[in-house]
Length: 310
Image (cartoon, rainbow, N blue to C red; front, side, top):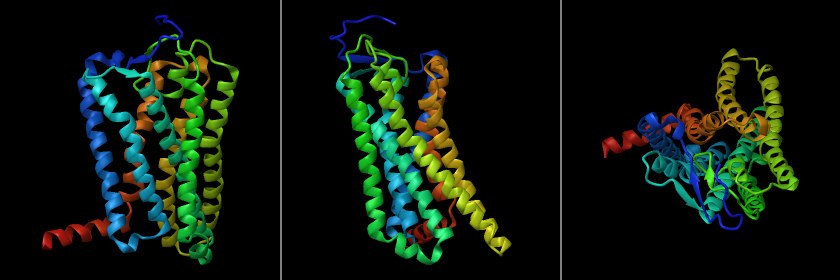
């Protein structure tokens, strides 16, 4: 990697998908299609939940917040990635990189914490249904959603400031966006405190909510097994299985990306993992959580039926 003046690096260059030079047009088409589907899915979910009063419940409130967060999360990464694939923009300013990292981490941590809140909502609904309307009232829902967003962006700000206070000696980012490890690799030296801070934030953003979700689903499954009706057990298990699919992929990829030892870092593997949690996971959320949900499907049919009649 090319050496630069420690105080003179004001612009970075993305290496992007240069190892897949012959497939860049194909990657552009695939990623663009997935991006459009993600945006369309999230817009449909938010719109349907807003206009159908039957979906004005805590569960769908958190789903709409997750969809909005996922939409902005995708906007932070994918447009610039698509531009770099067709050779329009391979560079980013120091300030632009810091801004991208801040918003990427902010929405990413918010999504992780939101999944934990949604797990808690399901836990209360299944394990304590008689108190559900009291425990998960609208005031509590708004406080939970606001706290999650505030926590996500506070941790993101701490991480971004700690990184961009360092002097940079390199300008080539071996990645397709400004992520924590690729940017830290450009610093002249990384103090131990930065590594400790990154680990602490990763534990708070990934391990803590994942552990909370694991405990919640253990309690949920134990409650489901006590349901007398076989049909009731089957329906509730199907819902939990869908939720767990997204949770495992989301936290699994994040854990590999941020807890993998530095010595095991390989650029192609890192990019594959990053593509999963920046392109694939945002698409899975609307599909698994909502568009496969019968209530959302029924609401969508009502809206479409209303439009065809008018």
